[in-house]
Length: 325
Image (cartoon, rainbow, N blue to C red; front, side, top):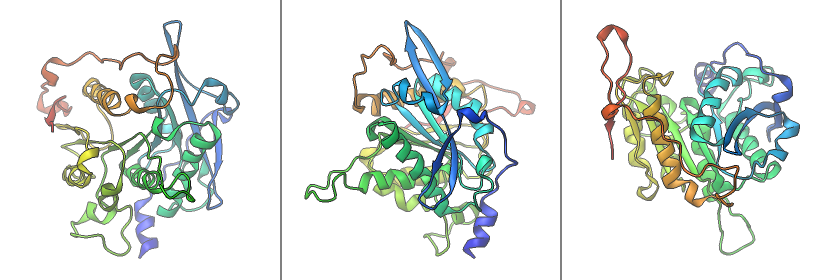
């Protein structure tokens, strides 16, 4: 049954192309090779730059400074299709960003069939690249998981909160990641189809069971018109987050599953920037006074009352938070 669930769950799109010299190849603990790309955000002389870097140029860009998002994409996506969105996030949030493909997706289509276990090994390889190859401190890393990507992101958030820095030390100090962003997340795969009441054998990505063990500030993003992962999944997941680590969620009326409509992007970016400022930037390692880092979060021009009305046939969401906790 597990294999059947994986076959239905994972739907890799036809592979898209990226410039080969901009690809970082990673080897996972399960022996597969997966691609990733790195987008660097910097300010120099008052001018901001946001661009993808060749693998050979990343280490010289100062990757250990500032905040870095580790992005885990949704189903039916790969690196080529998400690149414009990732560059938009990097620029609007003023952060570095590293994204990777899952085993069996995109340029890793021939590395083997995708699976839950591969996804966990894939994000571990990406995190290891940031931590050990680029020397990015754990508290400077924010995990961003969209839909399917919420599974590996929750997994890694828990692992970082529970793995001792020095296993031989009696203090068992851990280094949890700086933050966790879950965009259209699900409680577990089975629960997307039917509320089982508990995690059954064969279920995949049991985020509802992992979130109580996360030790990082966590924010949820969900649209009330999501027809793939029902909105109430985020409501239930919010309750599962430890109270100390709950950030005010972003619930947007009318937003669907597969895109953040241009009309709600100002609200979306403003709220994520607020989250980073309140919960992440103050805790990063390094000097924020560095001239290459932003001095304050970007403020997207606010929509009047955070609300826009549309006619029925436009089918565009209202840019309004329906729940603010």
